[in-house]
Image: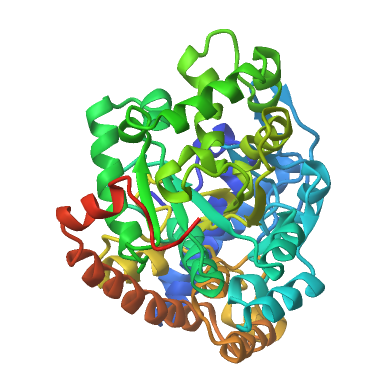
Length: 473
C-alpha cells in the first residue's frame, strides 16, 4: 500500500512531488541493480510512471532529473523573489536549481570579484606553493581586495587571518571543515597569525538554547577545530561570551561599529524587523570587530593598522560589506575576503546543510557504517532512472551530490577527472560513484575522530587563553 499512488499526491507541492519522483527513480535503480524479483521491479516502475504523470499534471512540465519545477518561488521575510533568483543571507540559502546557487550572478549581486587564473597564479608565485585544490577547483571563487593582501605580503607587510564558527550543535558536519581546512593552508603558506571567533552569543540570540548550552557547544566545537591541526603558537580561538568581558580593545571596536551603523541600515542589510530582539540588531558589530587588529592587543602589540583576511562562505559577506563600509570611518583598514561556495546537503544543492538534520550531511561523529548508509540512502544522484539509460546517456556530475562531495575531499585531480569522464559517459554507475565517496569519507572522518580524541580540555584552554602568539609586531 505504501508504494501505491493515492489521493495524498494531490496535497503535495510541486517540489515535494519532484522529490517523490526522484526517490522512486532511485528505488527502481536499486531494485534492478540488486536483481530483485521481476514483479517487484515492475510494481516499482508502475509507481514511478504514475508519479511522473502526477508531476506533469500538477506542474505542466515533464520530470527531468536534477531540475526542480521552474515555478518554484522563494520567499524571505515576506518578500517575493524573482523566479530565477537565489536566496542567500547569513541564515538562509535556497535555490530552485539542482546545480546549486548561480555564483556568477551572486558575484554581480554582491559586488565582489571573481578569483581568476591570474590571481591563483599570483598566490602561487607569492607563496612558492601549489594552490590548494579549493582554489584550483573554484570552491573558493570570489574575493574582496585579495590583490591588496598580496601587495602587502610581497612588500613584507604583515596581515592576519580571521574566520569563525557559529556553534549551533555539539557535533559538526564535514561541511563545517571547509573554511578551516582552507584557513589552515593559508596560515601555513603565508605564516601569519589566525583568530577564530566562536559566536556562541549569536546562537543564544537566534536559537532556542540557554547561554550555558551555547557556551558548551562553543568549547566542543573548538575541539573539532583544533583537531584540524592548527598550531597553538599561531592561533587564538575565542568565545564571544568569554572574550568580550575581558578585552577592552574588542569592546571599543564593537561600540565604534555600532555608532556608525543605523537601525535602518541593519534592517536593510540583514532583514531585521521591529519584532527582533535588540541583541540580534546589535550582533553584526560583534562579528565585525575581529576584523580590526586592535581587538587583539595581546597579539598585535596594540597596533591598529594590520590588515585582516577573512576566508568564509559567501553567505557571511553581508556582515563584512557592512564592516568594510564602516572601517574607514573609524580609522581602520578594510578587511579582505575570500568566499567559498556552499557545501551541499546530501539531498541536493538547493540548500546548505543543517546541523539539526542528521541525514542532511555526514557528521564528524558518524561511524563508518553510518557514513555508508547515509551516502547510499540519501546522496542525491545525477544518474538515470535505469541502468540501460545510464549506460546510453551517462550521468550528470553537475547535480550528483556524490561527485560534488568528491570535488571537496578527493585531492587527486587526475582521479577526479577520470571519475567525471567515466560517470558522464555512463561507464561508471551511481552505486559505483557512491562507493568511491564512501571509501574517501570513511578514513577522513575516522582520522579526524582520532585527532579529536587527543584534544584535552587543557589544550582547549591553551588555544582559548588570550596571549601573545609567535609573531613580533
